[in-house]
Image (cartoon, rainbow, N blue to C red; front, side):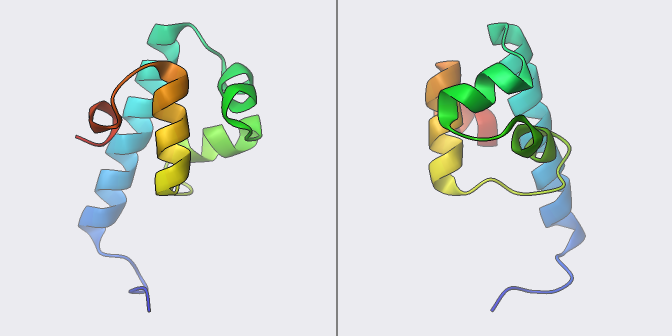
Length: 77
């Protein structure tokens, strides 16, 4: 059963991961719409990940890393 509310450090890490997704996406020259199309997600979902409103699953992180052509570790380090 998940902890509710989540510890502050989890929320902070979620923000860092979202920032890394955004930075890497921009560096790759993709819009949120383009990245969403590449991984089969709505651009609103990409926005929610980047702003830490929602946490991506491991599968979604793997798809995003692949679409951006970076190792998964670069997004979650």
